[in-house]
Image 1 (tube, rainbow, N blue to C red):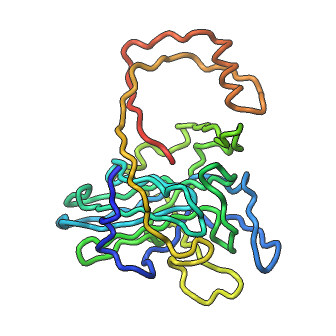
Image 2: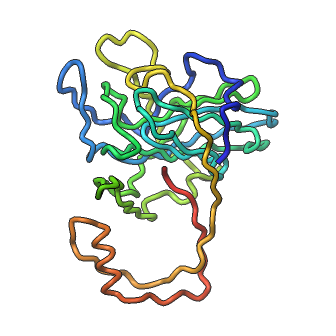
Image 3: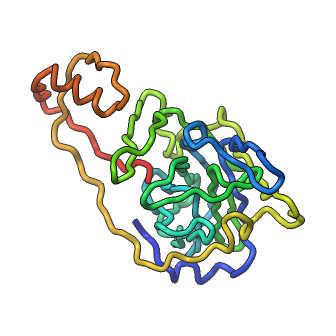
Length: 287
């Protein structure tokens, strides 16, 4: 994790240049003219976003900032740089600021974002009242690289990630179990060499609501004027797993809770034998 409030010093206050983007338009039902509704179970999901760029030289600094509804993880050339936003009121959404320059290089570069919309309220996130297109998953980014602005818009590529299953929060902690099928996630999608030509353009979400006559870049309803992160960034390291065990496929019983299904299958299979020196690298996922 890298970043500091001072990193935003080179970015002007007021209207952003980045557009809210996603892998498609959220399914908002317009029950009344004044407010929309979103089915949290159907709307929850992940979006993979990419933006390639070529640099003849790397500037001394490249101030950048971004945020999302609900969470994002930003990778630069395959390495995680930032994740957020912090817990807070979605109608006064916080953004994270950082310096891109130390993570850029001459030649081809890529920004990759894994963004998530939770759908159901959690102890650290609550949905905002949706408009006709905002309130069901959105990401915004902007950076000044030399004399050029790089902002989230339709020039980004987007992929609606289906590798994660849709789950309701469980227990008093309100945490959803993570059911992830790695086979459904494009391998190497965060890397510069990945070919995203088959991905469609990101969808630019419009800030449409009754009485709207303005622009679509922040600040807009329902997220309000975006405010800088008021607390320090968390620090962390990528750790390697030890050995992994290999086993044949297990038949899991059909239970309402997928976590209980997996536990039952593992208990029935008994202790697994350790593989012969197989190693994997534990890499960070979505916030």
